[in-house]
Length: 187
Image (cartoon, rainbow, N blue to C red; front, top):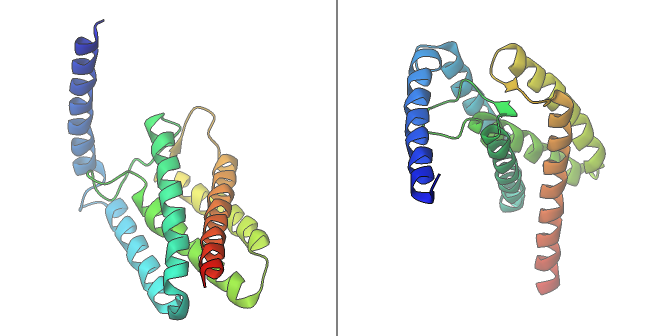
């Protein structure tokens, strides 16, 4: 098959997939389903808790940690979703990335508060992160799988999710430490 033909086939397949995704969302994940409202409530509660609990004196530092965690997990989730390892069958909308509730809100907010707690109380971020990742991966991941909010294929397991959670949390932590080191070196 020539380049132009292959390109057109990819384009047409993506158009068909987009239409199927919109139809699926309207029928099984839309405004009249509990999935939609579960996603909305999860986002709202997470943001309310963050708003009430965030240390305003360290707002940018903690938000940078959360932003880094969000970007890393969103990219990992995108790759896993595109390769059909991990599917979020009931996204908040058919226009947003599929795992946005978890990767953009629940995971970053949870680990932002853990980062804040550990750094304020001089606790081991690594230990708390491993414990939280186990709870988040097996607990929330297991619940999501049971509630049909998450489907895993091709050998993907909750254990892999735990390891990804740990890796993302640690990489985000190291990034913030690197930027804080630059900040202190320049002051």
